[in-house]
Image (cartoon, rainbow, N blue to C red; front, side, top):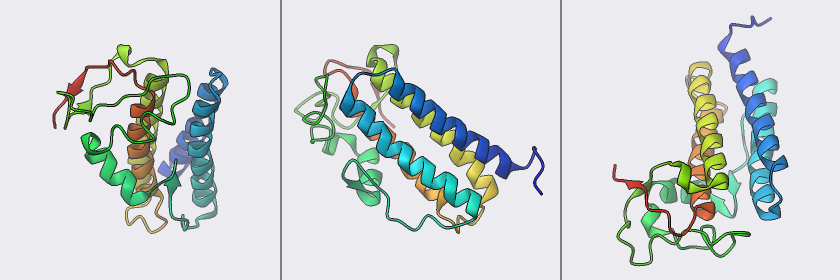
Length: 178
C-alpha cells in the first residue's frame, strides 16, 4: 500500500495531469497537424503511465515525429544545425514555421520563451515544463532508472523543445546563448 505522500503516487498524479493537459491543448485547436503531433506525445505519456503502474520497463525505442532518441537529443542541443528541416517548417500546418538556420543572425542560439512566440509554441513550452516536473519526481522514485522512465521523460522534454520550432513564427527573435 502506498500513502498519498509517496513520491510514486505523486508521479502518477503528475503523469495523469500531463495527459489531461495534452488533451486540453488538443481540444482548443482546430489544426489537425498540431493535434496529431500532440497525440504522438500523448501515446508515449500513456505508455509511461502503464509502465510505472505495472512496474515494467519502457522497452520500446522512443520515436516521435520521425525522430529517434539520438536525433531528439542531438537536435535539442544543436538547434541551428537543423532548424530549417522538415519538422520545423515544411510539415507545419497553419503556420510559417521557423527557419532559424537559413543564414540568420540567430544561428547557434536557443529559444527564449516569450508571449510573442504564439499560442501553439507557448502551449508546447508549457507541456515541456510539465514533462520536466514529471522527470524530477521520477528521478526521486527511480534512482537507478531501471525502467527507463526518467530517460524517456528527459527525451520527451527535448522533443517538445524541438517541436516549438515547428510552430514558432518565422519572425520570432528572442534567443539566448547557453
